[in-house]
Length: 283
Length: 280
Image (cartoon, rainbow over all chains, first blue to last red; front, side, top):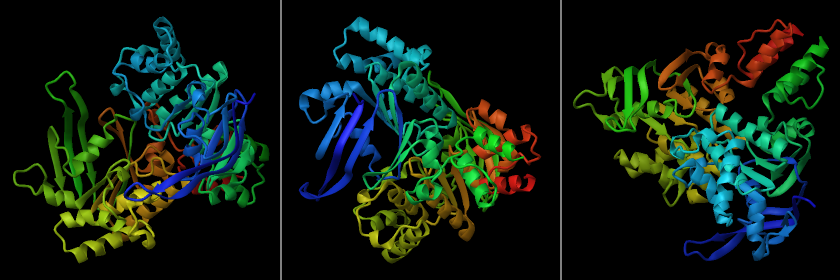
């Protein structure tokens, strides 16, 4: 069974006038067919307003389809009785850690999710401890979240999600507000969850370097999927990406600029190591 | 409009259990017209530092000279300082509030006591300078895309015609094209108007591409201060304080290790292309 499957998913936001009357609709997602297998790491790219975040919100039933269907772990998100199961299966992490943390002590914040699921108290504490260990924040369990750095807060937010034991985590620009170290911390944590816990990961980001390790990259534009493939294949289409207001990692851009100057490099170079290796081959 | 900070110290919540020294003995001189980048990890003191520049917070200890005048002297005109140093906060679009774009941008100059005509003239100029399309001037700012909202918010500060423009992470959350457009426009503005621009950013690639000088903050103190080449040559120390060099700099170091005779002080793609082409 697919972890996530959407069939001709359409979502329209209502346009309201000053009095709150509906005066039209705005199609944010336009006939998206998406299938994500358990354990996959799928990255979603797209410019501001391309529909990425709206799609993410469909994956744990914050929003439900206007037309078409979304199944999370086989459950139709449109059925009201599925909502808790859907949200337990697909956990979300948002951009701003300060909007997601509600506890005054780290461990209480992490326990909030399982508590809402009705998990018995002893089991909650076991899960809190486990989750904080998995994100490398166990030594901060008695701290106030206010005093943590951005990267640490985001890791606490991730711990709060994995304490609910989801099969899938959807991260909507989790690193946009972080400094370079915070970004690395969060990505390393996500990578470990994927490898050790086999959690399905859906990552939305504007940082192209973060996408290099994905199994599959999806590019969205005007609510539709316009490109799809391995990072290697997607990032070898530099001009097309630019058309969609995107970019490529610096190593890829450098290789592309060198190719334009006549240097015979292979397409789809993604990392420093690959570029250095390819240049060594030339010499 | 030079800026000179002398031994600035700033302490939050003095006298309580939460006392925190955010700035320690920071001395910085910025001559008029420079394009300066400030980098540092979360909590390094960057935001505290820039809030000193337009007098939003006053140093616990130390002196700040703006254009040679002591800002902390009795009778110094703080209002004039705030008119001359424009501060664009993180996520400035959260501060938009007017019914249409043009009125929102007029708010600053209106508070400076200018006539309606003059306000509108300045607002139009500012919107033009950030590349905001004229056909949307009468739209509600809340109906715009993220990138357009950000432009309107920056224009709101520019309309006050500051001599010094300070931007705190102006591109956070924008897509790559939006990021490049806004930074290109700021660079153009800097070149054409000659104003001082101070850019706080977490993107080392952006900083390397645009600024003349980088100031690195760490735990409330100034760690490095120099050209991008000088500062990024300390990439190992930068990593120790939660930062990094641009990816191209790492590529050049890796090439050198493999025997290529390249200059490792490269910080931008254009320089790297030239440097690699030379040795192939």
